[in-house]
Length: 189
Image 1: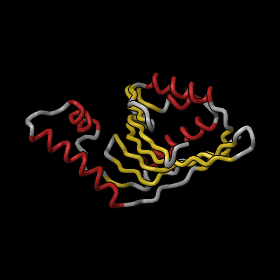
Image 2: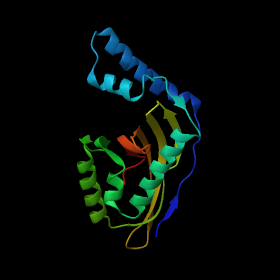
Image 3: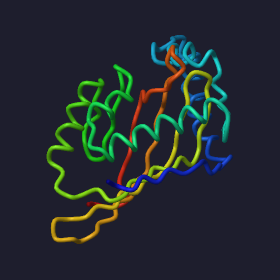
Image 4: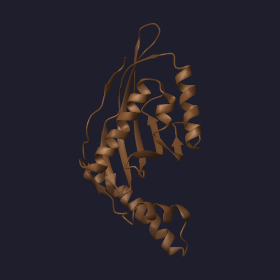
């Protein structure tokens, strides 16, 4: 059984400025052009107009993100493709390093099935600590880093590190699911 490491948030208050500026810039462009792109309108409706975002280090939004990432790390460590895919919205956008953008939970499920079926290294440890959570009402941005320790068939250990950013969406039952997921590795593995 792999070791699962899960740690808490480390706040970097200045980092949320870029996200806020990006959202405000997009909203401003939509207003300036005289049109309301569907995506901007949908984000405004989902966030209840809360486009300012607020870094949170505790409370229900932060706890929801911890629970979401904890469930993902557990499912990934167990090689559970269904468990991983069920943590994404039906219309999720999935952006893997070096591959085209993909859309939909079914595509994510198929990708995890193929990955777990082809995996030759034994997973020894996985950790995906959250470094920051920014709350936008019923949506949240999660930024963090990850590390996988794997063992090859010859007993060599490989450490893979990566960065991720997730946009999660609160569901009617109060749970959170990943709407957008993007990550990239720190080196070519």
